Length: 457
Image 1: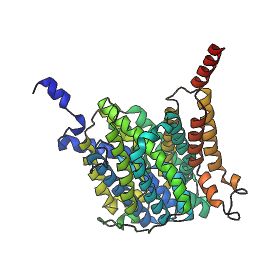
Image 2 (image 1 turned 180 degrees about the vertical axis):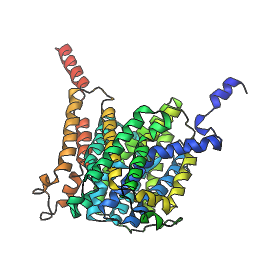
Image 3 (image 1 turned 45 degrees about the vertical axis):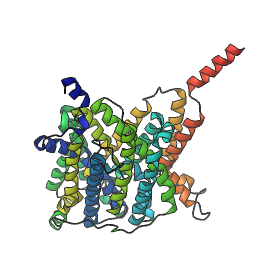
Image 4 (image 1 turned 90 degrees about the vertical axis):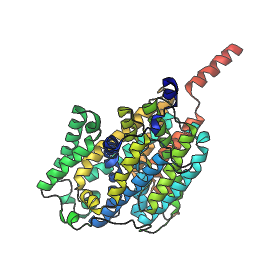
């Protein structure tokens, strides 16, 4: 076979990387997504008032669910899985819906909603071609920006020690120690991100949290008994919380499943574009969405929250130009191992809320700006500005002032469920963006119609 033929037949996705090189590359992927993956279960743990042991349990579940979902995406099982270096993790996108579910119904409703969302994505995987046109960059950007903006308030609650602490003892919330730690985490994150390159820069948030954690230990803010009392090995406990599916979850999860499906399409295209200089094939896109769906279903059975592809890892592929799926397969085993070791989960669970809060301020801000970047991928005309303005205004307004709808949608008239959906912020934002984008013609179309009318006259 000639060198030219070998070059044409070479597929970088299937390139086998020797373990001495694959292990650090796989760890890079784990480090890039680790903070985001543990943030969501920690926030939900705070909402349900979980103690240290249960918090550790939820973190373990997140690591195990993410590891299995990532393995399925990268390795593939039949039509399921992109067979690309797609990394899965718990998704911020679902937080606006999962928070009220956890608060009002409990973890059994969260698990039920996650399973329902996974089933919806299975269906979407077979119809993504016809759905894609409804979600151009403008719409997906609006939704992603709304996710970040509506959750920033959660980050500030944590930076002060958590909303639960505020409700129980307002005097103990947002003390100088807690605020100082949150600011320290932010400053270290910014300095590391701006003064380093490669994996160190990618892990800036993790490094910032590590510094904040160590300082917290010396300040006496960490309870070491949480770690010492945790066991070394633990097997999964499927359906530990049981199963429930409130009506609010059915409507909300359909919308959120569509949103995260489009996000996965973007991430998958980003990986093939950044690593191989091509668009993802229809088979890869379908496999990625089905991998998302099956990963979410398995994660929910293991008591973890919905999974989706991680954009941070898309950037890592573009940075390293290593698109071998076997690197991510190796990384998935680190996540699975972490999910089976309670000690690791306990170390994270013992972390003071203010440390997470400092990191979350940065992370949710980055999510918001990533959405803004997506929005402006298209020409930002006055039409697009109007759609974005209305969508984001509803997202922020209804999430910040949920009482605004109390007199219209309440328990007395049986419409409280609608209020819960609307005050998530994300759902009204997504619906408004999709509808307005569909019914308002692009400005270029208006100009063409005018030109045609002039020519006819």
